[in-house]
Length: 363
Image (cartoon, rainbow, N blue to C red; front, side, top):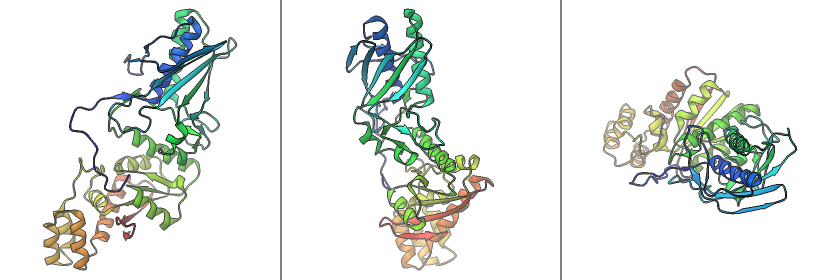
């Protein structure tokens, strides 16, 4: 991720995919049905929280005395999901009558170690909705085949520990692998929902840890700069991306005393203009706005800023003309953030960071 990463959205209809939770549910149902009947259903059909009933082809199956295992290859559709193509397996083992259903983290599935998440420390990182989906799927099989729904479900993801290093999991205190996620079972391509969920989880973990200062950054360069500037631990660094609004609105209801917003000049200009979604497809830099900011300082340079080809060129013109444009933008961006927080007890400061990592402005 960079501060000015181009959009990867293709120019065609986008294909939806399935969450890790949906794949784990399908694998667990197939394995439990094999335990009950001796036969793996292939494909296996599950019911999603909103009533959809997709069918999943099995990748691998195996069974032994008192256990069965099945796996599904995750299809994330056209979403750039790190788990696309991952093999998600469920091994189901019989438990004594009345034991109920319990969950175990197999290879590639993480364990929760910090408070603040939906699952408490010491538990496998299998979120509440996937757990409910699996319980309901096994319950349906048990009712149909007149068997007890008492089982241990072990979920594993091939290569999950390596994949997890590309996610927020290490910062959230999830160690050893991926999380099994999903609230609807469906992956919507390029949806902001997953990113917003990660932002909220990061805030929840920071609050639970008692942190008093967090930072939201638009990309790697700005994150590195804010880490050095404030000596913040990883747990305090929130990968905001383009979703300034999502971060600010959640902090409005779940405040932390201090917030630093860090980003490149173009992204922070959009925030200064009042945009809360900073993506290039949903907000553009307004050069007239920048020229108006600069106008009281230097008329000739301000006019040139209004005719610039890009935010970067506008900044170059301002710097040559001795206009503190980055600082003016930082102040306006801070005003937008403060207005969005609507009086919540959060003190905001803003860093604007150059592509070389240099801090250009700071409120």
